[in-house]
Image: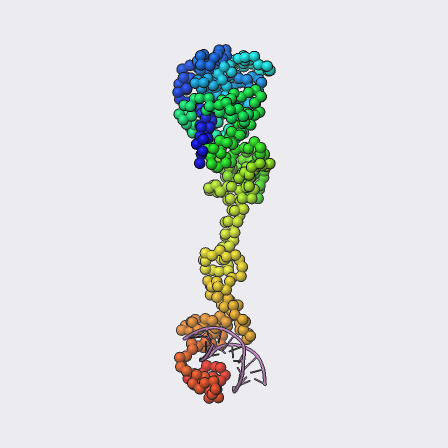
Length: 431
DNA sequence: CGTGCCGGGTC
DNA sequence: GACCCGGCACG
C-alpha cells in the first residue's frame, strides 16, 4: 500500500521526531551533560565545534523573527542539524547547529528584529518542563499524534515505531525533509523566520500526510486544518455537540456513563468527530446518523440508528411474530397479514384455506369449518373433538363402494336412493 | 375433474 | 320432512 517512494519521507519524519538514535545517544551522553550553559553552540562551525547537544537540552533559536527557547530533540551531528522542539510554538523545527545557541539573547548572528525574550538561564529551566518536552517529543514520534490538542498516548506507542536504525542512519539532511510547502526543494530547509505560520501549517499538513502514508485509514483523531472539528455525542437521543474532546468526554462520562464508567477511555466509544466546512469528504463527517461506533464495547447499547433498528426492530419483529405465530420460525417477515403460503400454525392454515377460497355462500362458522377441515384427516380419532351435533359430524371418508350415482348413472337418477338424490350419504351402498 | 357428502336453504 | 343445492374434500 505504501508507495516506496514515500517511504523515505516517512522514514525521515520518523527520524525527525523520534528519539535519539542509539549511536548519537551515546555521543550525547559522552559529550554535553545537558543544560551546561555553553555560550552559544555556534562557536561554530558545523562539523568543527563538535559541540554535542543533548536531547532535552535547552537551546534557543530564532523562529519567526524572535528568539525562542526550545528543547533539543536530536542532534544530527553528521550535518550538524538539530531537531528542536519549541514548546511555545508547540512545534518542531530543524536548525543548523550554528543557528542554535544555548543562552538567551545570544543570537549567532545579527538578527534584524531582536525581540526581547525573557532571559532565562538554561539552568533555570524546570526539569519538569524538560520532562514535559521530552514527553511531548516521545509522543510526537507517533505520526498520528502531533496535533497539539490531541496528545493521546493511546495511539502513540511511544515512538517505538520510529525504527531508529532505519531512520537515523540516513543521517543526511534529506531525511529531515520538513516539507513546508514553501516549495523549497532543499532537503533540509531550515525554517525561515517568515515561515512560522507556514511551519505550523506544515505540521498539520505533514500530520495528515503521515496519517495517510502510515495508515491506510484516516486517523479519526486528527484534526484537519481546514476543518472545523466538533465532537458529537453518540449516545442515544443525545447528539450533543461539543467543540473539545475534553468537553465531550466529560459530557459522556457525567451524563451518560455516570458511575458505570469503568474506564476513562470508554467515552471514546460514545462520541465521534464531526467536521464542518469540509473540503474533502471525511469519513468521520458522516456519522451523525450512523455513527461509526461499532466498537466492541461490552455495554455499548449502540446509540446508532443501526442499533436502534437492529436489536430493537429485531426483537420487535420477534415479538410480532410471537403473537402471530407460535412456531419459532426464523423468518423475518414484516408484520403484515400472513401470506397464504405461510402455514406454520394450524389456526392459520384454517384461516388461510378459508380465505384463499371464495367464501361459501352458506353460513359456516369458523369452528365448523375447522371441524370440517380436520375431521377427515382425524377421522380415526373422532373422540378428539366434541362435535356439536353428533358423533359423526365429521365428513366421512369417501367410501370405496360405488354409489347410486355411479351404479345407475346420472341418467337414472330416479333409481338412486333417496340419500343419493338428496346428495346425502348413500344409504344403499353403505360402506 | 369427478364423486361423495355435509350443511344449509326452501317449500 | 322432503327436496334441493352450494361447496368442500378427496381420489
